[in-house]
Image 1 (cartoon, rainbow, N blue to C red):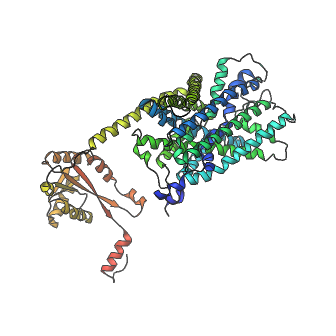
Image 2: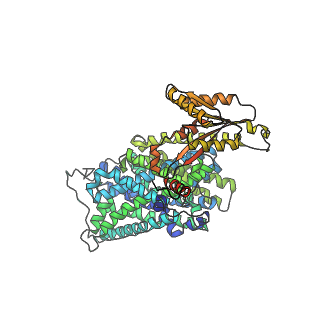
Length: 638
Protein backbone atom coordinates (compact mmCIF):
# COMPACT_ATOMS: atom_id res chain seq x y z
CA UNK A 1 0.00 0.00 0.00
CA UNK A 2 1.47 3.38 -1.01
CA UNK A 3 1.47 6.51 1.11
CA UNK A 4 -1.53 8.01 -0.71
CA UNK A 5 -3.71 5.01 0.08
CA UNK A 6 -2.56 5.02 3.70
CA UNK A 7 -3.58 8.67 4.15
CA UNK A 8 -6.72 8.77 1.99
CA UNK A 9 -7.86 5.16 2.00
CA UNK A 10 -8.60 2.86 -0.92
CA UNK A 11 -9.82 4.48 -4.15
CA UNK A 12 -13.54 4.39 -4.97
CA UNK A 13 -15.18 3.43 -8.27
CA UNK A 14 -17.41 5.86 -10.16
CA UNK A 15 -20.38 3.64 -9.32
CA UNK A 16 -19.75 4.26 -5.61
CA UNK A 17 -20.86 7.90 -5.89
CA UNK A 18 -24.39 7.06 -4.70
CA UNK A 19 -22.95 5.76 -1.43
CA UNK A 20 -21.12 9.07 -0.93
CA UNK A 21 -24.31 11.13 -0.81
CA UNK A 22 -25.33 12.82 2.44
CA UNK A 23 -28.34 11.83 4.51
CA UNK A 24 -30.28 14.42 6.53
CA UNK A 25 -28.49 13.44 9.74
CA UNK A 26 -24.98 13.67 8.33
CA UNK A 27 -25.85 16.54 5.99
CA UNK A 28 -26.85 18.69 8.95
CA UNK A 29 -23.60 17.98 10.77
CA UNK A 30 -21.50 18.75 7.70
CA UNK A 31 -23.27 21.85 6.38
CA UNK A 32 -24.57 23.39 9.62
CA UNK A 33 -21.22 23.56 11.38
CA UNK A 34 -20.39 27.03 10.03
CA UNK A 35 -23.73 28.56 10.98
CA UNK A 36 -23.97 27.02 14.48
CA UNK A 37 -20.32 27.72 15.26
CA UNK A 38 -20.90 31.45 14.86
CA UNK A 39 -22.16 31.59 18.44
CA UNK A 40 -18.54 31.14 19.48
CA UNK A 41 -17.55 34.55 18.13
CA UNK A 42 -20.54 36.52 16.74
CA UNK A 43 -21.80 37.56 20.17
CA UNK A 44 -18.30 38.50 21.24
CA UNK A 45 -17.91 40.67 18.15
CA UNK A 46 -21.07 42.60 19.10
CA UNK A 47 -19.80 43.15 22.65
CA UNK A 48 -16.39 44.25 21.37
CA UNK A 49 -18.14 47.16 19.64
CA UNK A 50 -20.64 48.12 22.34
CA UNK A 51 -18.83 47.59 25.67
CA UNK A 52 -15.89 50.00 25.17
CA UNK A 53 -18.33 52.84 24.42
CA UNK A 54 -21.37 52.06 26.57
CA UNK A 55 -19.92 50.07 29.45
CA UNK A 56 -22.49 47.97 31.33
CA UNK A 57 -25.34 49.52 29.34
CA UNK A 58 -24.11 47.54 26.37
CA UNK A 59 -25.65 44.41 27.88
CA UNK A 60 -29.11 45.98 27.61
CA UNK A 61 -28.53 46.97 23.98
CA UNK A 62 -26.86 43.76 22.68
CA UNK A 63 -30.11 41.71 22.62
CA UNK A 64 -31.82 44.52 20.69
CA UNK A 65 -29.01 44.49 18.11
CA UNK A 66 -29.46 40.72 17.83
CA UNK A 67 -33.17 40.87 16.95
CA UNK A 68 -32.81 42.24 13.38
CA UNK A 69 -30.02 39.71 12.77
CA UNK A 70 -32.36 36.87 13.78
CA UNK A 71 -35.13 38.35 11.62
CA UNK A 72 -32.81 38.45 8.64
CA UNK A 73 -31.77 34.86 9.33
CA UNK A 74 -35.44 33.77 9.13
CA UNK A 75 -35.88 35.62 5.81
CA UNK A 76 -32.72 34.01 4.39
CA UNK A 77 -33.79 30.51 5.46
CA UNK A 78 -37.15 30.91 3.69
CA UNK A 79 -35.50 32.45 0.63
CA UNK A 80 -32.85 29.76 0.24
CA UNK A 81 -35.49 27.05 0.59
CA UNK A 82 -37.05 28.61 -2.53
CA UNK A 83 -33.65 28.52 -4.24
CA UNK A 84 -33.36 24.80 -3.47
CA UNK A 85 -36.82 24.20 -4.96
CA UNK A 86 -36.08 26.19 -8.12
CA UNK A 87 -32.47 25.10 -8.70
CA UNK A 88 -31.99 21.46 -7.66
CA UNK A 89 -28.65 21.07 -9.45
CA UNK A 90 -26.87 23.22 -6.86
CA UNK A 91 -24.79 26.31 -7.29
CA UNK A 92 -27.07 28.37 -5.06
CA UNK A 93 -26.73 32.10 -5.54
CA UNK A 94 -24.42 31.69 -8.56
CA UNK A 95 -26.87 29.55 -10.53
CA UNK A 96 -29.82 31.80 -9.62
CA UNK A 97 -27.99 34.99 -10.59
CA UNK A 98 -26.59 33.54 -13.80
CA UNK A 99 -30.02 32.59 -15.11
CA UNK A 100 -31.88 35.70 -14.00
CA UNK A 101 -29.35 38.54 -14.10
CA UNK A 102 -26.72 37.35 -16.57
CA UNK A 103 -23.02 36.62 -16.82
CA UNK A 104 -21.35 39.50 -14.99
CA UNK A 105 -23.62 39.66 -11.92
CA UNK A 106 -23.15 35.88 -11.64
CA UNK A 107 -19.38 36.33 -11.65
CA UNK A 108 -19.72 38.93 -8.89
CA UNK A 109 -21.61 36.34 -6.84
CA UNK A 110 -19.02 33.67 -7.63
CA UNK A 111 -16.10 35.83 -6.53
CA UNK A 112 -18.01 36.89 -3.41
CA UNK A 113 -18.72 33.28 -2.46
CA UNK A 114 -15.15 32.18 -3.11
CA UNK A 115 -13.76 34.90 -0.84
CA UNK A 116 -16.38 34.14 1.81
CA UNK A 117 -15.70 30.40 1.82
CA UNK A 118 -11.96 30.94 2.08
CA UNK A 119 -12.45 33.44 4.91
CA UNK A 120 -14.77 30.95 6.62
CA UNK A 121 -11.90 28.50 6.86
CA UNK A 122 -9.35 31.08 8.02
CA UNK A 123 -11.65 32.69 10.60
CA UNK A 124 -13.07 29.44 11.94
CA UNK A 125 -9.68 27.81 12.35
CA UNK A 126 -8.24 30.93 13.98
CA UNK A 127 -11.20 31.11 16.35
CA UNK A 128 -10.73 27.43 17.21
CA UNK A 129 -7.10 28.16 18.00
CA UNK A 130 -8.22 30.98 20.30
CA UNK A 131 -10.51 28.57 22.14
CA UNK A 132 -7.63 26.14 22.63
CA UNK A 133 -5.23 28.83 23.83
CA UNK A 134 -7.88 30.02 26.32
CA UNK A 135 -7.52 26.66 28.05
CA UNK A 136 -3.80 26.23 27.38
CA UNK A 137 -2.22 29.73 27.45
CA UNK A 138 1.24 28.28 26.92
CA UNK A 139 0.27 27.64 23.28
CA UNK A 140 -0.37 31.33 22.49
CA UNK A 141 3.09 31.81 20.96
CA UNK A 142 2.47 28.82 18.67
CA UNK A 143 -1.08 29.65 17.59
CA UNK A 144 -0.20 29.98 13.88
CA UNK A 145 1.38 26.52 13.88
CA UNK A 146 -1.61 25.08 15.77
CA UNK A 147 -4.00 26.67 13.26
CA UNK A 148 -2.08 25.25 10.30
CA UNK A 149 -2.20 21.78 11.86
CA UNK A 150 -5.99 22.15 12.16
CA UNK A 151 -6.28 23.14 8.47
CA UNK A 152 -4.17 20.15 7.46
CA UNK A 153 -6.30 17.82 9.59
CA UNK A 154 -9.60 18.93 8.10
CA UNK A 155 -8.14 18.92 4.56
CA UNK A 156 -7.05 15.29 4.86
CA UNK A 157 -10.44 14.40 6.35
CA UNK A 158 -12.25 15.84 3.34
CA UNK A 159 -9.86 14.25 0.85
CA UNK A 160 -10.93 10.90 2.29
CA UNK A 161 -14.39 11.40 0.79
CA UNK A 162 -17.77 12.89 1.70
CA UNK A 163 -19.06 9.90 3.65
CA UNK A 164 -15.92 9.43 5.73
CA UNK A 165 -15.60 13.16 6.47
CA UNK A 166 -19.26 13.31 7.52
CA UNK A 167 -18.79 10.49 10.00
CA UNK A 168 -15.46 11.88 11.19
CA UNK A 169 -16.77 15.41 11.76
CA UNK A 170 -20.47 14.78 12.44
CA UNK A 171 -20.38 13.56 16.02
CA UNK A 172 -18.40 16.57 17.39
CA UNK A 173 -20.93 18.89 15.73
CA UNK A 174 -23.84 17.27 17.52
CA UNK A 175 -21.97 17.19 20.82
CA UNK A 176 -21.33 20.93 20.48
CA UNK A 177 -25.00 21.65 19.70
CA UNK A 178 -26.21 19.68 22.72
CA UNK A 179 -23.48 21.10 24.99
CA UNK A 180 -24.36 24.68 24.02
CA UNK A 181 -28.05 23.91 24.51
CA UNK A 182 -27.28 22.63 28.03
CA UNK A 183 -25.15 25.72 28.71
CA UNK A 184 -27.92 28.10 27.60
CA UNK A 185 -30.73 26.26 29.41
CA UNK A 186 -28.78 25.81 32.65
CA UNK A 187 -27.40 29.35 32.51
CA UNK A 188 -30.73 31.08 31.85
CA UNK A 189 -32.40 28.89 34.49
CA UNK A 190 -29.82 29.94 37.07
CA UNK A 191 -30.28 33.57 36.06
CA UNK A 192 -34.06 33.25 36.45
CA UNK A 193 -33.63 31.63 39.89
CA UNK A 194 -31.14 34.35 40.93
CA UNK A 195 -28.48 31.84 42.04
CA UNK A 196 -25.81 33.22 39.72
CA UNK A 197 -24.39 36.73 39.75
CA UNK A 198 -22.97 38.87 36.93
CA UNK A 199 -19.22 38.55 36.47
CA UNK A 200 -16.93 41.08 38.13
CA UNK A 201 -13.53 42.27 36.92
CA UNK A 202 -10.61 44.02 38.56
CA UNK A 203 -10.48 47.71 37.53
CA UNK A 204 -6.89 47.44 36.32
CA UNK A 205 -7.00 43.98 34.81
CA UNK A 206 -4.78 44.23 31.67
CA UNK A 207 -6.60 41.35 29.98
CA UNK A 208 -9.98 43.15 29.98
CA UNK A 209 -10.33 44.93 26.64
CA UNK A 210 -12.59 47.68 28.03
CA UNK A 211 -12.08 49.39 31.39
CA UNK A 212 -15.46 51.14 31.15
CA UNK A 213 -17.51 49.53 33.94
CA UNK A 214 -20.10 52.29 34.20
CA UNK A 215 -23.64 52.11 32.89
CA UNK A 216 -24.04 54.86 30.33
CA UNK A 217 -26.12 55.39 27.22
CA UNK A 218 -24.35 58.63 26.40
CA UNK A 219 -22.28 57.02 23.67
CA UNK A 220 -25.17 55.29 21.92
CA UNK A 221 -25.77 56.34 18.33
CA UNK A 222 -27.14 54.94 15.11
CA UNK A 223 -23.58 54.54 13.80
CA UNK A 224 -22.60 52.51 16.88
CA UNK A 225 -25.64 50.25 16.61
CA UNK A 226 -25.02 49.70 12.89
CA UNK A 227 -21.37 48.91 13.64
CA UNK A 228 -22.40 46.34 16.24
CA UNK A 229 -25.01 44.95 13.84
CA UNK A 230 -22.45 44.55 11.06
CA UNK A 231 -20.11 42.69 13.45
CA UNK A 232 -22.88 40.35 14.58
CA UNK A 233 -23.86 39.52 11.00
CA UNK A 234 -21.00 37.01 10.97
CA UNK A 235 -23.64 34.74 12.55
CA UNK A 236 -25.40 34.54 9.17
CA UNK A 237 -22.56 32.93 7.23
CA UNK A 238 -23.10 29.34 6.20
CA UNK A 239 -26.81 29.68 5.44
CA UNK A 240 -26.15 29.55 1.69
CA UNK A 241 -24.06 26.37 1.88
CA UNK A 242 -27.04 23.99 1.76
CA UNK A 243 -28.36 25.47 -1.50
CA UNK A 244 -24.90 25.15 -3.05
CA UNK A 245 -24.61 21.48 -2.12
CA UNK A 246 -28.03 20.10 -3.11
CA UNK A 247 -26.46 17.44 -5.43
CA UNK A 248 -24.52 16.08 -2.44
CA UNK A 249 -27.71 14.86 -0.74
CA UNK A 250 -29.36 11.48 -1.15
CA UNK A 251 -32.58 11.32 -3.11
CA UNK A 252 -34.96 13.04 -2.82
CA UNK A 253 -32.16 15.57 -2.67
CA UNK A 254 -34.34 18.70 -2.70
CA UNK A 255 -36.53 17.54 0.17
CA UNK A 256 -33.53 16.44 2.23
CA UNK A 257 -31.72 19.74 1.56
CA UNK A 258 -34.78 21.76 2.59
CA UNK A 259 -35.15 19.76 5.80
CA UNK A 260 -31.50 20.32 6.68
CA UNK A 261 -31.88 24.05 5.94
CA UNK A 262 -34.87 24.39 8.29
CA UNK A 263 -33.11 22.41 11.01
CA UNK A 264 -30.04 24.61 10.59
CA UNK A 265 -32.17 27.75 10.93
CA UNK A 266 -33.91 26.58 14.09
CA UNK A 267 -30.67 25.53 15.78
CA UNK A 268 -28.90 28.77 14.81
CA UNK A 269 -31.71 30.97 16.14
CA UNK A 270 -31.79 29.11 19.47
CA UNK A 271 -28.02 29.01 20.00
CA UNK A 272 -27.24 32.55 18.84
CA UNK A 273 -30.21 34.20 20.53
CA UNK A 274 -29.78 32.19 23.72
CA UNK A 275 -26.07 32.85 23.99
CA UNK A 276 -26.56 36.63 23.56
CA UNK A 277 -29.19 36.66 26.32
CA UNK A 278 -26.92 34.68 28.64
CA UNK A 279 -23.84 36.80 27.92
CA UNK A 280 -25.84 39.96 28.54
CA UNK A 281 -27.34 38.63 31.78
CA UNK A 282 -23.89 37.72 33.10
CA UNK A 283 -22.39 41.00 31.83
CA UNK A 284 -19.39 39.27 30.26
CA UNK A 285 -16.58 41.62 29.28
CA UNK A 286 -14.44 40.69 26.25
CA UNK A 287 -10.88 39.74 27.27
CA UNK A 288 -7.66 39.47 25.29
CA UNK A 289 -6.74 35.83 25.82
CA UNK A 290 -10.01 34.34 27.10
CA UNK A 291 -13.10 34.00 24.89
CA UNK A 292 -16.55 35.13 26.00
CA UNK A 293 -17.88 31.57 25.68
CA UNK A 294 -15.10 30.35 27.96
CA UNK A 295 -16.07 32.91 30.61
CA UNK A 296 -19.77 32.04 30.35
CA UNK A 297 -19.14 28.29 30.64
CA UNK A 298 -16.86 28.83 33.63
CA UNK A 299 -19.47 30.99 35.40
CA UNK A 300 -22.42 28.69 34.68
CA UNK A 301 -20.78 25.38 35.54
CA UNK A 302 -18.34 26.48 38.25
CA UNK A 303 -19.18 24.97 41.63
CA UNK A 304 -21.80 22.59 40.24
CA UNK A 305 -21.72 18.81 40.11
CA UNK A 306 -21.27 18.97 36.31
CA UNK A 307 -18.31 21.38 36.30
CA UNK A 308 -16.66 19.05 33.77
CA UNK A 309 -18.99 20.61 31.21
CA UNK A 310 -16.67 23.63 31.08
CA UNK A 311 -13.97 21.49 29.48
CA UNK A 312 -16.53 19.81 27.23
CA UNK A 313 -17.67 23.24 26.03
CA UNK A 314 -14.09 24.41 25.39
CA UNK A 315 -12.96 21.26 23.62
CA UNK A 316 -16.00 21.00 21.39
CA UNK A 317 -16.10 24.75 20.76
CA UNK A 318 -12.63 24.36 19.33
CA UNK A 319 -13.74 21.31 17.36
CA UNK A 320 -16.89 22.95 15.97
CA UNK A 321 -14.86 25.96 14.89
CA UNK A 322 -12.51 23.62 13.08
CA UNK A 323 -15.49 21.82 11.59
CA UNK A 324 -17.07 25.14 10.57
CA UNK A 325 -14.37 25.15 7.92
CA UNK A 326 -15.88 21.88 6.76
CA UNK A 327 -18.85 23.82 5.38
CA UNK A 328 -16.48 25.60 3.00
CA UNK A 329 -14.82 22.30 2.09
CA UNK A 330 -18.21 20.96 1.01
CA UNK A 331 -19.61 24.13 -0.59
CA UNK A 332 -16.70 25.71 -2.44
CA UNK A 333 -15.46 22.61 -4.37
CA UNK A 334 -18.98 22.14 -5.76
CA UNK A 335 -19.14 25.81 -6.75
CA UNK A 336 -15.72 25.51 -8.43
CA UNK A 337 -16.97 22.37 -10.20
CA UNK A 338 -19.92 24.32 -11.62
CA UNK A 339 -17.67 27.26 -12.56
CA UNK A 340 -15.25 24.86 -14.27
CA UNK A 341 -18.09 23.46 -16.39
CA UNK A 342 -18.98 27.04 -17.32
CA UNK A 343 -15.31 27.62 -18.27
CA UNK A 344 -14.66 30.31 -15.66
CA UNK A 345 -12.00 28.48 -13.63
CA UNK A 346 -9.43 25.85 -14.68
CA UNK A 347 -11.11 22.60 -15.68
CA UNK A 348 -9.04 20.67 -13.16
CA UNK A 349 -11.60 21.77 -10.57
CA UNK A 350 -14.23 19.63 -12.34
CA UNK A 351 -12.33 16.40 -11.71
CA UNK A 352 -13.06 14.09 -8.81
CA UNK A 353 -10.20 12.49 -6.88
CA UNK A 354 -9.66 8.86 -5.94
CA UNK A 355 -12.26 9.18 -3.15
CA UNK A 356 -14.82 10.84 -5.46
CA UNK A 357 -14.32 14.21 -3.76
CA UNK A 358 -13.35 17.33 -5.70
CA UNK A 359 -9.79 17.07 -4.45
CA UNK A 360 -8.37 20.01 -6.46
CA UNK A 361 -10.92 22.36 -4.91
CA UNK A 362 -10.12 21.00 -1.45
CA UNK A 363 -6.38 21.54 -1.94
CA UNK A 364 -7.06 25.05 -3.26
CA UNK A 365 -8.85 25.90 0.00
CA UNK A 366 -5.98 24.45 2.02
CA UNK A 367 -3.32 26.54 0.29
CA UNK A 368 -5.15 29.90 0.28
CA UNK A 369 -6.54 29.58 3.82
CA UNK A 370 -3.10 28.63 5.15
CA UNK A 371 -1.59 31.73 3.55
CA UNK A 372 -4.27 33.91 5.15
CA UNK A 373 -3.69 32.37 8.58
CA UNK A 374 0.04 33.00 8.28
CA UNK A 375 -0.48 36.54 6.96
CA UNK A 376 -2.90 37.54 9.74
CA UNK A 377 -1.14 35.64 12.50
CA UNK A 378 -4.25 33.49 13.17
CA UNK A 379 -5.94 36.57 14.71
CA UNK A 380 -9.73 36.20 14.47
CA UNK A 381 -10.51 39.87 15.16
CA UNK A 382 -8.21 41.03 12.34
CA UNK A 383 -9.91 38.73 9.84
CA UNK A 384 -13.56 39.27 10.86
CA UNK A 385 -13.80 42.55 8.84
CA UNK A 386 -12.95 40.55 5.71
CA UNK A 387 -15.43 37.84 6.54
CA UNK A 388 -19.03 38.88 5.93
CA UNK A 389 -18.74 41.16 2.90
CA UNK A 390 -18.64 38.39 0.32
CA UNK A 391 -21.58 36.47 1.72
CA UNK A 392 -23.79 39.57 1.97
CA UNK A 393 -23.07 40.53 -1.63
CA UNK A 394 -24.16 37.04 -2.67
CA UNK A 395 -27.22 37.28 -0.38
CA UNK A 396 -28.33 40.53 -2.03
CA UNK A 397 -27.89 39.41 -5.63
CA UNK A 398 -29.49 36.06 -4.88
CA UNK A 399 -32.59 37.70 -3.35
CA UNK A 400 -32.93 40.11 -6.27
CA UNK A 401 -32.44 37.27 -8.77
CA UNK A 402 -35.25 35.31 -7.12
CA UNK A 403 -37.50 38.35 -7.51
CA UNK A 404 -36.72 38.31 -11.24
CA UNK A 405 -37.34 34.56 -11.26
CA UNK A 406 -40.87 34.93 -9.82
CA UNK A 407 -41.70 37.79 -12.20
CA UNK A 408 -40.47 35.71 -15.13
CA UNK A 409 -42.04 32.34 -14.28
CA UNK A 410 -45.09 33.40 -12.22
CA UNK A 411 -44.95 29.99 -10.57
CA UNK A 412 -47.41 28.91 -7.89
CA UNK A 413 -47.45 31.30 -4.93
CA UNK A 414 -45.20 33.80 -6.69
CA UNK A 415 -47.06 36.86 -5.37
CA UNK A 416 -46.25 36.27 -1.71
CA UNK A 417 -42.85 34.71 -2.43
CA UNK A 418 -41.71 37.79 -4.30
CA UNK A 419 -42.48 39.88 -1.20
CA UNK A 420 -40.24 37.62 0.89
CA UNK A 421 -37.38 37.99 -1.58
CA UNK A 422 -38.05 41.71 -1.87
CA UNK A 423 -37.74 42.12 1.89
CA UNK A 424 -34.60 40.00 1.85
CA UNK A 425 -33.12 42.11 -0.97
CA UNK A 426 -33.75 45.34 0.91
CA UNK A 427 -32.38 44.05 4.21
CA UNK A 428 -29.26 42.43 2.78
CA UNK A 429 -28.55 45.46 0.56
CA UNK A 430 -28.69 47.77 3.58
CA UNK A 431 -26.57 45.32 5.55
CA UNK A 432 -24.00 45.18 2.75
CA UNK A 433 -23.56 48.96 2.77
CA UNK A 434 -23.43 49.02 6.57
CA UNK A 435 -20.75 46.32 6.66
CA UNK A 436 -18.66 47.99 3.95
CA UNK A 437 -18.97 51.39 5.67
CA UNK A 438 -18.02 50.08 9.11
CA UNK A 439 -15.40 47.55 8.07
CA UNK A 440 -13.76 49.24 5.10
CA UNK A 441 -10.77 50.73 6.90
CA UNK A 442 -10.51 47.69 9.20
CA UNK A 443 -9.58 45.49 6.25
CA UNK A 444 -12.74 45.11 4.17
CA UNK A 445 -11.04 47.07 1.40
CA UNK A 446 -8.86 44.02 0.73
CA UNK A 447 -11.88 41.89 -0.18
CA UNK A 448 -13.37 44.71 -2.27
CA UNK A 449 -10.05 45.03 -4.13
CA UNK A 450 -9.59 41.26 -4.53
CA UNK A 451 -13.01 40.60 -6.03
CA UNK A 452 -12.45 42.53 -9.31
CA UNK A 453 -9.07 40.84 -9.71
CA UNK A 454 -10.63 37.42 -9.25
CA UNK A 455 -13.45 38.35 -11.61
CA UNK A 456 -10.96 39.50 -14.26
CA UNK A 457 -9.16 36.17 -13.92
CA UNK A 458 -12.43 34.28 -14.49
CA UNK A 459 -13.19 36.36 -17.58
CA UNK A 460 -9.69 35.66 -18.91
CA UNK A 461 -10.09 31.91 -18.31
CA UNK A 462 -13.43 31.93 -20.11
CA UNK A 463 -12.02 33.81 -23.10
CA UNK A 464 -9.06 31.44 -23.25
CA UNK A 465 -11.25 28.33 -23.30
CA UNK A 466 -13.56 29.95 -25.86
CA UNK A 467 -10.62 30.80 -28.12
CA UNK A 468 -9.09 27.32 -27.81
CA UNK A 469 -12.49 25.73 -28.43
CA UNK A 470 -12.88 27.64 -31.70
CA UNK A 471 -9.36 26.64 -32.74
CA UNK A 472 -10.14 22.97 -32.07
CA UNK A 473 -13.60 22.96 -33.60
CA UNK A 474 -14.00 20.26 -36.27
CA UNK A 475 -17.12 20.45 -38.44
CA UNK A 476 -16.01 18.09 -41.23
CA UNK A 477 -13.34 15.43 -41.11
CA UNK A 478 -10.69 15.21 -43.83
CA UNK A 479 -6.94 14.44 -43.92
CA UNK A 480 -4.56 17.41 -43.98
CA UNK A 481 -2.35 15.80 -46.63
CA UNK A 482 -1.58 12.49 -48.33
CA UNK A 483 0.41 9.79 -46.58
CA UNK A 484 3.23 9.79 -49.13
CA UNK A 485 5.37 12.27 -47.21
CA UNK A 486 5.23 10.53 -43.81
CA UNK A 487 8.36 8.41 -44.30
CA UNK A 488 10.38 11.44 -45.38
CA UNK A 489 9.57 13.51 -42.27
CA UNK A 490 12.81 14.05 -40.34
CA UNK A 491 13.36 12.32 -37.02
CA UNK A 492 15.99 13.75 -34.66
CA UNK A 493 17.41 11.55 -31.89
CA UNK A 494 18.88 13.69 -29.13
CA UNK A 495 22.01 12.00 -27.81
CA UNK A 496 24.05 12.56 -24.68
CA UNK A 497 26.57 9.75 -25.21
CA UNK A 498 26.87 6.57 -27.27
CA UNK A 499 25.28 3.86 -25.14
CA UNK A 500 22.43 1.32 -25.03
CA UNK A 501 19.80 4.01 -24.64
CA UNK A 502 20.89 5.45 -28.00
CA UNK A 503 20.48 2.03 -29.61
CA UNK A 504 16.94 1.77 -28.25
CA UNK A 505 16.12 5.25 -29.59
CA UNK A 506 17.48 4.45 -33.04
CA UNK A 507 15.47 1.24 -33.20
CA UNK A 508 12.32 3.19 -32.49
CA UNK A 509 13.25 5.99 -34.92
CA UNK A 510 13.59 3.42 -37.68
CA UNK A 511 9.91 2.48 -37.27
CA UNK A 512 8.61 6.01 -37.80
CA UNK A 513 10.97 7.65 -40.29
CA UNK A 514 13.44 6.95 -43.10
CA UNK A 515 15.12 10.29 -42.46
CA UNK A 516 16.81 9.98 -39.05
CA UNK A 517 19.53 12.28 -37.69
CA UNK A 518 21.40 11.96 -34.37
CA UNK A 519 22.02 15.31 -32.69
CA UNK A 520 24.50 16.06 -29.92
CA UNK A 521 24.86 19.49 -28.29
CA UNK A 522 28.46 19.62 -27.11
CA UNK A 523 30.10 22.00 -24.63
CA UNK A 524 33.73 21.02 -25.34
CA UNK A 525 35.39 20.59 -28.81
CA UNK A 526 37.63 17.79 -27.48
CA UNK A 527 34.60 15.76 -26.50
CA UNK A 528 33.02 16.38 -29.92
CA UNK A 529 36.09 15.05 -31.71
CA UNK A 530 36.19 11.98 -29.47
CA UNK A 531 32.50 11.34 -30.03
CA UNK A 532 32.85 11.53 -33.84
CA UNK A 533 35.79 9.11 -33.72
CA UNK A 534 33.78 6.61 -31.66
CA UNK A 535 30.86 7.03 -34.08
CA UNK A 536 33.04 6.10 -37.06
CA UNK A 537 34.63 3.16 -35.25
CA UNK A 538 31.21 1.69 -34.46
CA UNK A 539 30.20 2.26 -38.10
CA UNK A 540 26.73 3.53 -37.20
CA UNK A 541 24.84 4.03 -40.51
CA UNK A 542 23.03 7.18 -39.43
CA UNK A 543 24.22 10.80 -39.80
CA UNK A 544 25.59 12.45 -36.68
CA UNK A 545 25.38 16.21 -36.27
CA UNK A 546 27.27 17.96 -33.47
CA UNK A 547 26.44 21.49 -32.41
CA UNK A 548 29.09 23.23 -30.31
CA UNK A 549 27.98 25.61 -27.58
CA UNK A 550 30.87 27.77 -26.31
CA UNK A 551 28.66 29.33 -23.62
CA UNK A 552 27.81 25.89 -22.15
CA UNK A 553 24.08 26.46 -22.62
CA UNK A 554 22.51 23.53 -24.48
CA UNK A 555 18.92 24.80 -24.60
CA UNK A 556 19.37 27.86 -26.82
CA UNK A 557 21.52 26.12 -29.49
CA UNK A 558 19.08 23.21 -29.51
CA UNK A 559 16.12 25.57 -29.98
CA UNK A 560 17.90 27.42 -32.81
CA UNK A 561 18.67 24.11 -34.50
CA UNK A 562 15.03 23.00 -34.37
CA UNK A 563 13.81 26.36 -35.71
CA UNK A 564 16.20 26.01 -38.65
CA UNK A 565 15.07 22.45 -39.39
CA UNK A 566 11.42 23.41 -39.10
CA UNK A 567 11.90 26.17 -41.66
CA UNK A 568 13.13 23.53 -44.17
CA UNK A 569 10.06 21.31 -43.86
CA UNK A 570 8.01 20.55 -46.93
CA UNK A 571 4.22 20.63 -46.95
CA UNK A 572 2.80 17.84 -44.79
CA UNK A 573 6.08 17.06 -43.02
CA UNK A 574 6.70 17.01 -39.27
CA UNK A 575 9.78 16.72 -37.11
CA UNK A 576 9.89 13.97 -34.51
CA UNK A 577 12.38 14.49 -31.67
CA UNK A 578 13.23 11.47 -29.52
CA UNK A 579 14.56 12.21 -26.04
CA UNK A 580 15.76 9.52 -23.67
CA UNK A 581 14.54 9.66 -20.09
CA UNK A 582 16.49 7.65 -17.56
CA UNK A 583 14.03 5.81 -15.25
CA UNK A 584 15.36 4.85 -11.83
CA UNK A 585 14.20 2.27 -9.31
CA UNK A 586 13.70 4.80 -6.52
CA UNK A 587 12.37 8.37 -6.57
CA UNK A 588 15.39 9.63 -4.65
CA UNK A 589 17.73 8.27 -7.33
CA UNK A 590 16.35 10.96 -9.65
CA UNK A 591 18.36 13.49 -7.67
CA UNK A 592 21.49 11.90 -9.11
CA UNK A 593 20.44 12.47 -12.71
CA UNK A 594 19.88 15.49 -14.92
CA UNK A 595 16.25 16.61 -15.43
CA UNK A 596 16.90 18.18 -18.85
CA UNK A 597 14.14 16.04 -20.39
CA UNK A 598 11.52 18.29 -18.82
CA UNK A 599 13.11 21.46 -20.23
CA UNK A 600 13.56 19.96 -23.70
CA UNK A 601 9.91 18.94 -23.76
CA UNK A 602 8.73 22.41 -22.71
CA UNK A 603 10.91 24.05 -25.35
CA UNK A 604 9.66 21.80 -28.12
CA UNK A 605 6.03 22.52 -27.21
CA UNK A 606 6.51 26.02 -28.69
CA UNK A 607 6.93 24.56 -32.18
CA UNK A 608 3.82 23.85 -34.23
CA UNK A 609 5.23 21.09 -36.44
CA UNK A 610 7.46 19.31 -33.93
CA UNK A 611 6.57 16.26 -31.87
CA UNK A 612 8.52 15.29 -28.74
CA UNK A 613 8.71 11.59 -27.93
CA UNK A 614 10.01 10.58 -24.49
CA UNK A 615 11.84 7.26 -24.69
CA UNK A 616 12.06 5.68 -21.21
CA UNK A 617 15.21 3.71 -20.49
CA UNK A 618 14.83 1.54 -17.40
CA UNK A 619 17.72 0.50 -15.28
CA UNK A 620 16.85 -2.22 -12.77
CA UNK A 621 19.83 -3.77 -11.07
CA UNK A 622 18.02 -6.93 -9.98
CA UNK A 623 16.55 -7.57 -13.44
CA UNK A 624 19.94 -6.98 -15.04
CA UNK A 625 21.55 -9.54 -12.74
CA UNK A 626 18.79 -12.06 -13.51
CA UNK A 627 19.29 -11.52 -17.24
CA UNK A 628 23.05 -12.03 -16.98
CA UNK A 629 22.55 -15.10 -14.85
CA UNK A 630 20.10 -16.60 -17.37
CA UNK A 631 22.59 -16.03 -20.17
CA UNK A 632 25.47 -17.52 -18.14
CA UNK A 633 24.17 -19.62 -15.19
CA UNK A 634 27.73 -20.37 -14.03
CA UNK A 635 28.55 -16.67 -13.55
CA UNK A 636 28.75 -15.33 -10.01
CA UNK A 637 26.55 -12.53 -8.82
CA UNK A 638 28.32 -9.25 -8.45
